[in-house]
Image (cartoon, rainbow, N blue to C red; front, side, top):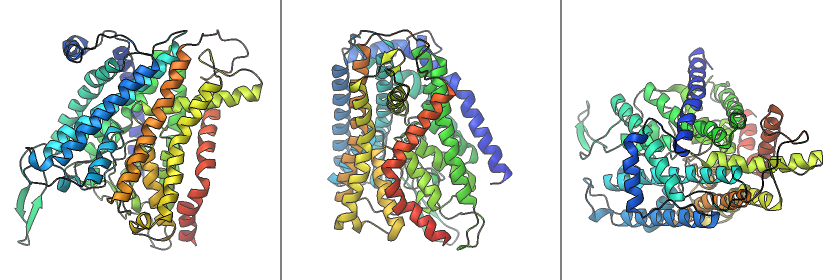
Length: 558
């Protein structure tokens, strides 16, 4: 790691730390319905939307909240599915692209509705401008708003006492879009366009190279999609090469902004969480746990990528890296994108060294709680907090409590269910793929690396990440259908028990803190929380990782 990489990494982390309370404080004011800089301007639009959808503002219990959320996302799935199948008959398709297969349309629809943005296709040669905008970009906003809404419902469940309701889904989703996601995306899109990110409706350009041969240059409304793909922790690229493509990510400054946007809202939501529950220390404790796990992953990845390779005879591993950005930016992006449920890339994950690839995989396997997705990172972390408080209560011999509420059997069951649902998808679906001909037919690499490709595929799907090792041909009915169901379970198999836990917690009384209460806003609890996160992930996936990236690393050094 050279001095320039160290300076950039330090600058990146400092800017993230500085912006966390600034944006977090603003979002807290938005969700508390207090006065803020955009309220007077956007409030008439908000009220008009409520009139349009006949939302009177009445609050919902957890069952109605969950029902509204599921119906909303199901309608989004249907719209995007049929929009793709009708693509060849719709406007804004200057390249006359045909409709994708039903299995690919099914996979892509689930992918963008679940905030996964797994892409088994090349965007510029598969989907029209209309589908990219009205389908994918719109779902980038809606899926991110869904994650924030679930977090707000969970917070209300934690802070309210003897209550039946946890808020109104339609209000939470609308405010998330109008006051947070849309303004930030518009600002970032303008800056990215100024840096050279393409934003046009013109057909693909035809050019003649210096050698006299013809070349087709893909274009499209790129900048508007890239902004929300990063800010909403979506990750779906307009082009097949994602943010390694010069039209998506043309300059070092655009690269810095896009990396920052990946972690910005998830990081700021830790501060928002602290403000909404009335304890900034709780928010900062979660932030420090996430930040520490991020640093650990960065340290291992930087060490592995910069370590001298006896096989290749080189000091740094530049295979699969974009030379415009260098190794340092590639490593930072790989850890950031898998610490959040983003999935965008500026280098090929398949070309990472075994240990760096394992870090990316392990970040996802931990449940996307190292900052995680927009909203989903913190409510996933709260599930681990519930489990940690329960374990701590057993250790000290008293009833476990969190924020003054007793943690009982129901909360522990919901937390375990939410944590295990994605894990079961990863292990079972990977095993099925390794034992069937359709599963093995998509491999481009044998041995441990081939196993890593399969495990990473289902880790990315179940963790709603969307990145891929790229050595696996997943555009086949087998993988399209299997990863589609994996994405559904990884998203809603977590959301439903989380909301059930929130509804149950809202009905409980709050007991005052006493001298025997185990505090959850101290460094000691932070260490215990990190241990539980790592142990749960380690015990669950250690055998699979041993046969994949660990074995590959041992073979490499041998």
